[in-house]
Image (tube, rainbow, N blue to C red):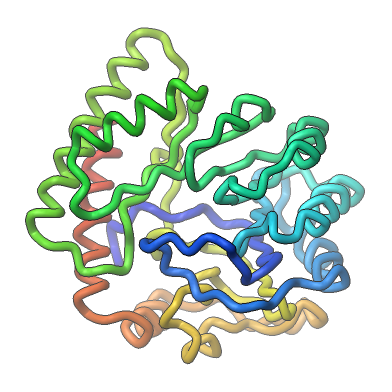
Length: 292
């Protein structure tokens, strides 16, 4: 896994729901009808929130967390009441973001909304970013056009994500490299022109692409060493990632070692999917180096 660059930094991931009304073809998540309860949410914030300090972010995740807007509001308000300073990231497809939630988020600038697809509502929020997915087979010209469209909507913060845990073909990887080279030129030119941009990939590293290092509390209160447990294919191997339960925070097992994490990945994904993921992530790493 050494060298894999794209993942979220450590923090606390709260899986508010496993439900999602939108099933993107590239999404590796496993879905169910499970939602987090309010007691589990409150227990997780109280048990682990203070450990985050001023830099550890709370990530509201799913499924699609806006399936449960009540839990999103509860998490934001409870974190504020507890004095947690690391900020909150709401990861959403964007399709369920209604005007009422926009008004709520405008009152809470500590919340960044990470959209899975461009939305004109991003311009109405204090903080918004775009998880920009690069799919196999998409031409570089199309990728650059999509980025320009997002810029026109007001996005200035991007997290670039090639599709992971699939078997990329050689030609697809070559086109992905072309896309990243074009993006480096485009974003570099905008930066030189004085347009402020943020590429989140520049400051995020981890052991597994796409998934978080750091505690993850699932809907039932189980605590895992990574939200890799949400991936389709990992259901039978969740026990290898489980550290304990939110009701007993002092009895959590230590986080997984690198060797144990590699073993879990080999059990949950095919060799071709892992090879494709490593190859796609290598193209992302080259892109990040070009930007620096």
